[in-house]
Image 1: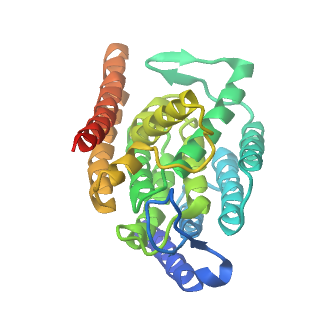
Image 2: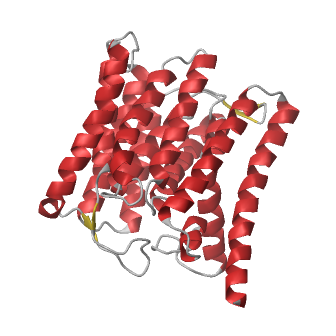
Length: 337
């Protein structure tokens, strides 16, 4: 009963903070003004992800008193790092921070957390144990900064990033049940509960946007939690496959065209789907089904031997490739008319 109360409190706090920010957004300078690269057409409050941060902290502190030691060791270190990165995001929501400065700050925070964690676990990739000793911290910082920005880049239409985060949180809960890493259960809940509370305000048509404060927090938190257990990284990439695949392919395409990767644009696959005439609700709803499918594949991955892990991984890539090809085909079809 007490744990359910903590879960409810996390969601409620997120909802209340988001609702409060909607009323106070002009006062705090938290208004997202539409431009030629936006997927929305009217000024909308932003920074609602602050509610996710507050709700997540409430769940972490609450669960600590139910024999989940989340205020010690690696979990406390990662949580503090996520709060630090969310502060950078909140400042970015209020005023412009140059892209290079944002990246440097993200690297500093990620590196500080890696340093504080000390000895890191090796990583299981497709059934092979990878331990690159002195190179591992470098790759972990690269992974964390990348996923933090992937969540930020993909937070462009109503409800999408919130539902993706909930899918990952649910997967962490599942992983916690089947492994000895039981503390991932409350961590997964700390992601799911407040994000679900925020989603009430962010589902199409959104009353408030998540903002950098929320996308930075979720991307950073998820990225670090994915390396707390050697078998968790690849399944987390699979569950976050839409975000990882879309961003990587889009950045490659932009680099080939000589375009600046860090500048705002509308060339992500989900943005191109909106450009085809589909609504935010349709795109978010369709991708939510893909999140569920990828979550199932990630669960299968965990229970599989090496050969099947490879098959599952390529199956996820095939699904994501099919989606991107479908968008490209629809664009060409539209041009024909």
